[in-house]
Image (cartoon, rainbow, N blue to C red; front, side, top):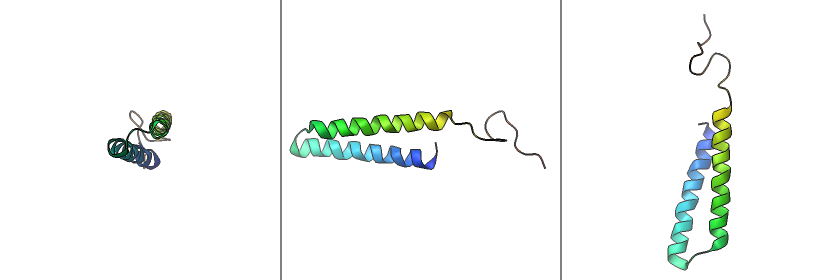
Length: 68
């Protein structure tokens, strides 16, 4: 997972915690939960796109690195 994908995952989890805390303290907000679901779908999409990108020349499993 790349840096931006990890950051997006952390933001998504933090948003889930904040949304749950808001719901417990002040009551449910449909728009807040909808926004969190959209954020979660975007995060899943980023993770899927990140895992489908090839590692690059000479990197990745089964591919030897550059030879000196």
